[in-house]
Length: 437
Image (cartoon, rainbow, N blue to C red):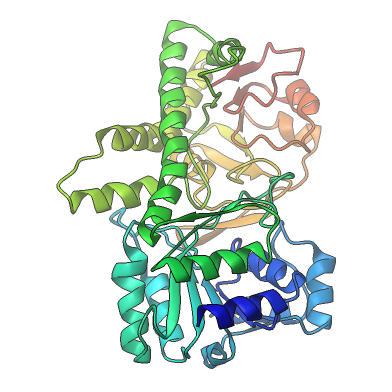
């Protein structure tokens, strides 16, 4: 089976399937098709399926013309019919792995995808899970589902492995194409074949590890590392505020050291599809082994409290102008979770807005990238353009995303007072009405 699949990969005589056509899945499907592999995208959302088949792109990291050309040349198509799994030789699972209402891993999308694949899985197929999850998911959850649902034997009839997605929306340097990949299969043959498949598509290196669990833990480590360091700098920011010290100047000074220090920056909290969630996966799994991840959980607590802290600071700023938060008009600038993208998943700005409203403030938002968002089942509309006259109407302008296409000089000139939680206005000369986190 290994030799046959390696030959098909080399000759590009292999059909690819990608389950989940979101921020991870669609860019992966496009790269597979661009590399010369006929690709089928699977998604339960008919809207995404229709858009792909019409050649209409909806993901920032995908080039519109690439998608359109691939669809026109019949190298890429989408479907919600999982019976087409029988036609693919390689299938990657790229579905969401959120947290449930109890802050525990919700792997229902992985489970349902594996069940759908199992019903149509054929011999000599490669299955790879890319969704971020806790160590053990591939072998303890996906493998039994595929074997029981298909009647096939892992390692003998099909290969299975884990290769964590590495997607940084809006990154102008590293995309799916040139980001190194980590691969861990169940067995050496599976790892070798999966690595060969990714190497045939991507420019980045493919690093092989000894098991899916290693690859799963590696992904958790990547994002927990950032979570902990951001938690540290957020705590430093709170302390520096009490001491009357600029944490931003402290960071600028510290990063002059050419070794042993990497700068991280404070903000209103953590957002995105991985960093705020992955540590919860690890701490949940650790309890199975009677282990308490104290450092990880401490950083999570600090980061989770940052929206509340920012609202408290906003109230203090207004108090200096003899205004209470209740009844004040507040304009929040930026709801995307990071600069220059339209992705607001887990954005702390959304919680900041809710906390401001709960305190009695009248809140509106301005984001040139996000015209509206959904939060707790409600659709909230904002402004994508703003005039000086509109800025003057608010008691407080609160910046929660550091977009680069915003006229910060204009905002400073016309705002009564500004609370900049991202230090994005550091180049603005006149700072008499600006307070920084």
